Image (tube, rainbow over all chains, first blue to last red; front, side, top):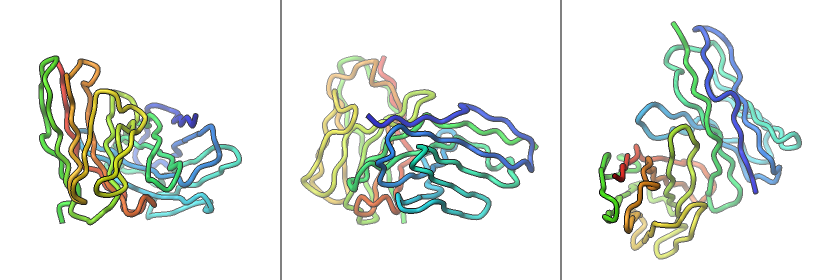
Length: 112
Length: 113
């Protein structure tokens, strides 16, 4: 059974710092991997989607990488801002039905 | 463009009561999903649908039922509510199951007392 783990559960950094969020998974037979952002009391917003054949995706200050052989993905946030404060979840797509398996999330606080 | 709309946003149920959580999307997505999120946890799939008239169970389907009579609507039915169903429920849709355009509603916070 596929398991997804995100460490740490919470992270607090000063504004301007570059940071890395980690996601690990137990089965390398994935369809794709997606990073979401969740603001308190809100739904989830898709940030980056990496297909199984890809190694990384970039959007603005965000860069996500995928290493299936080691069962890991990282989300790199450059020059963090207070507006980046949120919970970040990674999710694995295990097939073409669109079903996602989520990690528990990392709650990020960026202090001014 | 409204995206995925969920109603109600909040609800308190007594044990044994039933209710329907509504979900509608206006993006013409064939694929729709219901997830639940417990405090400090990730989301878990309850049911999903790959098109009108087609539904299937996810990871945690017990105590729930769904129907998909139209492309736009995917209601989730809770029968005989239990405290274990206290959670935040999210509806989502995607384009052809390829995960592009995966869009979530803003959630329904349900408390069973």
